[in-house]
Length: 105
Length: 193
Image (cartoon, rainbow over all chains, first blue to last red; front, side, top):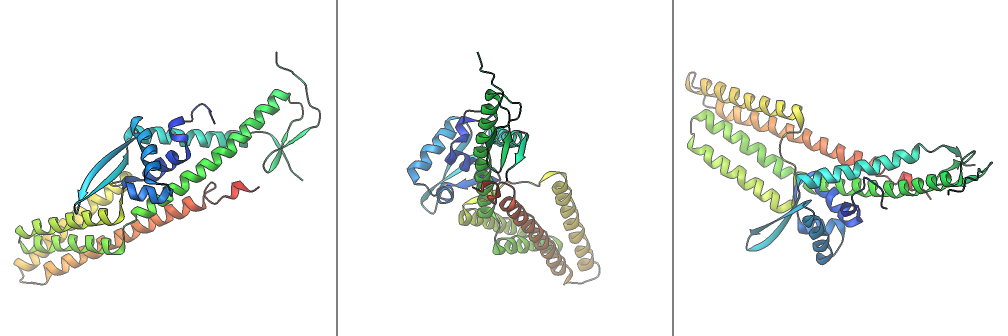
């Protein structure tokens, strides 16, 4: 779908899910994202990297009990882009509801 | 040059209803079908967004033990302040920091910090004023009238108030999650085939 207003970086299903999951949160652990999306570590890393390159997501590494934990957070830029993307999706739905229709029998 | 053939009474099937093509050109019908298709995809994407948001909120929802620990720590801060044992406040603060860190590690997700809007800020200021009033009242009762139980009662009252606030906050989040799940895009009602 290459509709104006839709962000091609966010629109990919996994990346859209990552942004939506992070939107109400301050931060989430890599494992939590992986389990929620039901994808492998490598797939999630790849998707997060794309969001990170765009400046939408930031990764923070933290050592807890001798183990490295990675936390992801949505940046201000990412939050703005995600909200704009959702608004564009809602606009598309509203646009279709404005098309004159006749009830199907 | 766009072909301008007017369709007389053709009805193009869409999802739930038919696009009224009466008096429309082929280009217009094609455009309408494109929009309908895009809207279907957009609806699906919005459904995914709602589900992911719900999952995020669910993951970060504070547990019962966490809410109880926060309430007890806040209550203990009021008690030690009213007793005048200010050196113990540092211990309460350290416990509070420990509880927050443990919660973060256990749940793997943290809700967005800070009070939500003006209502939240007013509630936070109100809570701080209430705590100060409790400390002052308990101090007076303890030092001037010799009621040794007053700081403990003040702390217990504070702990109860904090617990009740956290309970209502939790209910608010649960309602948000439920609303997201039952929203137009969350329940799959728009996806009937």
